[in-house]
Length: 282
Image (cartoon, rainbow, N blue to C red; front, side):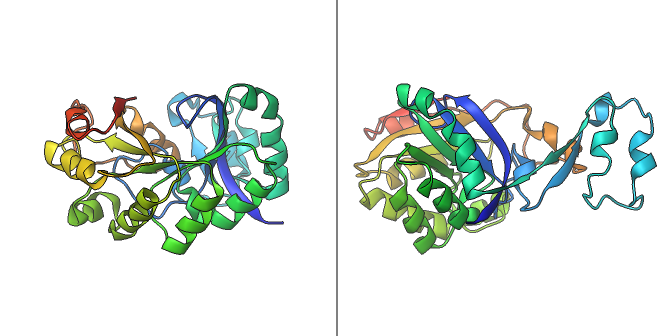
């Protein structure tokens, strides 16, 4: 039995793979994308999130706080808030306990050609836990949404056990990828090559960030990488959501990307369709 940490479980998801799905958000990510819309999924430990804007400053949280010089995530203050403005992002589960929760909806998921999707964060950071959960799902359809940033042997081991893969591709230029995500993209591109040669059904997802990767140059380079990938079902373009930075204040962090969050994005489907690659905008 293994343990993992989850920051959300979303039922009745319709954009996280085929059919109706339950999506499990695993904590921890090696990337630091400037546009990350799940900052509570970046670290591998539970964190305190506070809705400061609605706070009435009653002082009850301070009455029980044992660390006035800086939060150490003891969470003593959570139950004291009368408006429930404080919550813990991150719950530790055993693989058995999480699988039991997921299997409660098995009938409705299978009736709607759905299943379980593992997302994050980066779910491959908890690869052993993920595989142990899959072992307990009794053949229920499984999918993953991943950046592909992990060792090749880990990627292959997990991908072989899944039914469907959604892989994010953010930037093809290596230096720009490092600048805007904090990591080089060579591991990602190597894992993409394995995926292209496999018979595993997959989708490529591109989060479109205004002025960063929504250029014709980047999208055309991405499209060219996907030529000849027989098991690629389609490319999905995900336009940047202007509320992406809302959670940062709740974690006591500043959201200060190098792009204009209010600027619209270019959804250049033609870069893919001209090469015979199906493309949709979500």
